[in-house]
Length: 150
Image (cartoon, rainbow, N blue to C red):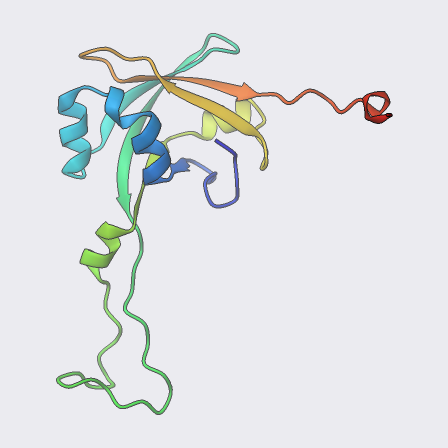
């Protein structure tokens, strides 16, 4: 997973549903999958394989912030709506556009000095009771200029 401005927050890491469901969700126990499906956070452990530390965290399924768009200037409001009504939060749309989030992640970001554009590995390693993930920073080897010569 590449750390981008969109996925790495000051206290959490956001994982796209596609990425999470393809690589992690299928390995989790049934009760954890059901909890996430019901929008209930799941307690997890994150084991840092690079330094041997374990962190307590929670895994959330978070809805996006989705508001109905404002009408175009000069456009008449749709039937039954007045111009005084503010655009409202669309819960149905927000639940369609969701992401998974691991929080808190700040202690790992600080301790490992994570930066944007780095890549990390996140792999499920739990069992029937414990939900745990192995975490590792994937280092790319430095570019050797001599290897570029024909």
